Image 1: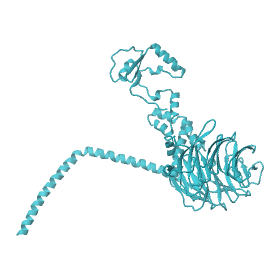
Image 2 (image 1 turned 30 degrees about the vertical axis):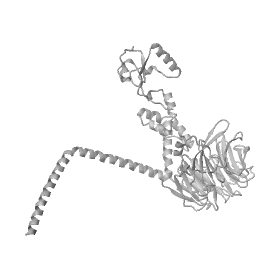
Image 3 (image 1 turned 90 degrees about the vertical axis):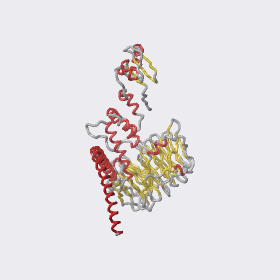
Image 4 (image 1 turned 120 degrees about the horizontal axis):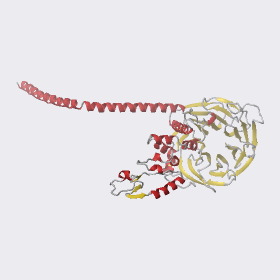
Length: 552
């Protein structure tokens, strides 16, 4: 919604009519009449007309009687409810621009509740409570949280350090980052689930061997589950009073530990939400489980091995073979399908917090970004962008707005910023959904950054706040730490501010000196010219004298 202020439209009384028209009015108007001037045409409202307008405006909560004093009205004079509705249509950049107009709009834009919606739309509920002191309201705190998180997202283009975590004896197939508790869970061919500290980069604890390869791990603050190649799901429940949530080393306790069977093939992917648990397997099914009773609620049948899944609200996305599927978890109906999304298998899948963006990574080394829109009956999927950052298969994807991270068999990690593409995608809504593996090189976007130097396969990747976690074939868990990049960026910005201030001071002094010494400079230049002429004359006489002596 956009509002445009026209210079030729104003509301006022007869006394201020000279401010409304470029040409002074000749006719006299009764003082209790309201003048409406638009496009050079004048309309007057009498007392009866004003009463009817007042009655109609009172029904919708607008007070027109306040518009009668002799003054011009601005945007901030609108009713607060109407201003709030207008600000709801702005994005964060537009809202920040509005706050720079004047102090009143700054207060309105900074305290608006939409900042909380902006934060939830990008990152969900914050890991830390929004409490910035007793003097700050919730709206202000949400704005500060949004600004800090948005600024922190720039650190992935800065400097980093790498922490290497040793403990696994064989390849690491899965790595999961629990950002809210700053924990990392990894497992692989050695059949052991290990817990690490995300910030310190230290091992916390590990489980007993589970009896088979673990290809999937998922966790939240209440439950930790691991999927094995034997078709079972092994889980641990949270332990009260434990700062690390789960006690993996404790002997088997039926109240705190469980194992669920149901799949007839290896489990390749797991996911959790508030009330359900999801598992995908090479038996070409995705099973939906109840977290409390551990009973299977629904089975979603595919026509190939299931490689990855990601739930959102009442839908779940999955990949099987080269296809991508969207399902309704309650009814089990298929809402949308993308056939042959990649040339080969589609191994990786990720989704934004709102569920509108869907990312796929495949055997052909490419990444596709799709826009998902849901109606009552089905989902519409439209491809927005494509990247080809890798020369090998992409095994894992992780997304935290605005960064998409991928791990590949070529031993590289790519970082992709999707903010610019989200702006350009609104301009070209006619692009159709991709139905084949053909890629137009003109529409391929480059990644913003590549992390490389590892000659092994990278099977899993995770992202959380200012760190990236990855596990590969060499059995080493690596954590890329970008926390120092934030401090360096703040230092650079402060130095830029100091340099700009010093530059403005020098320019101001130069202007002042040029103004004061203008006449002195002219006198000096005239004297210099005069001295130069005298020196030329003297030099001519000297040359003539020297020439005469030489002739003699």
